[in-house]
Length: 240
Ligand SMILES: NC(=O)c1ccc[n+]([C@@H]2O[C@H](COP(=O)([O-])OP(=O)(O)OC[C@H]3O[C@@H](n4cnc5c(N)ncnc54)[C@H](OP(=O)(O)O)[C@@H]3O)[C@@H](O)[C@H]2O)c1
Image (cartoon, rainbow, N blue to C red; front, side):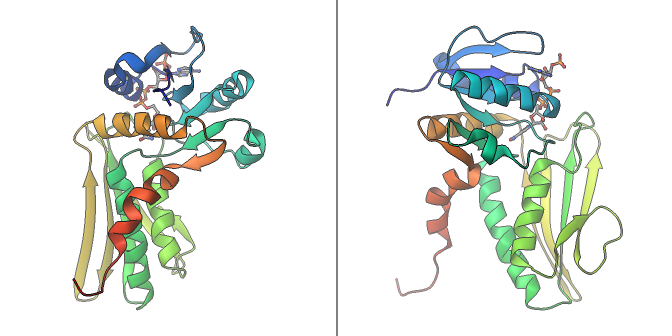
């Protein structure tokens, strides 16, 4: 299958980073008030939460596969709306390294679940202009931690109750995105931190997702793409 032609909604920081990585595959880029200038196989939505609904309607109307990179929105009936008519891939973070971290967060949660004195937690720091908080990545990592630690059923930014996961959010300066999942126990602490040095990992991952999605039907996440690549890394034991 030849490389799909790509369109991008949004000319902001992420949209510009994707355009810089896309090369000849990029057909058009449309900001607010601009219209797509022709058909493409896959469109990447790097705009804002409030525009996602409109961009989904455009993708369904034109039969274009859609990668949604914008964060801070919810659509409980997304699956029903898509109804297998096009491919849609949603991810709050397109870095494969973060997908690896989510798997490790689940293992960390499982380890916490073995002893109620071990508290899992999550910290995130982004630049001062980021609109949504906690970040979509933080919510994904929180879900991964809670999946491993069933006594934690929801996250909170407030002083947590025993069934809640404590999440800390910082909005300051120019940080591209730093996430830490941790475990605090009476006598020891374990932390795992991911820090993006630029938007390049998100841009490259969004383009990788667009190529993977083209030709598939239904709703997917980065998880589906990552499973093939990362799950074999979690096999241990056995003799060499
Ligand atoms: N999934 C990931 O890996 C990842 C990574 C980084 C960021 N993000 C998310 O991606 C989104 C964009 O981030 P950013 O840092 O690039 O934000 P940004 O710099 O504010 O860019 C957003 C752009 O979208 C444009 N826009 C607004 N409404 C639009 C519409 N209806 N159609 C087309 N474009 C529209 C804005 O135009 P105006 O300035 O004219 O309003 C702006 O150029 C955010 O939701 C962010 O959280 C996701």
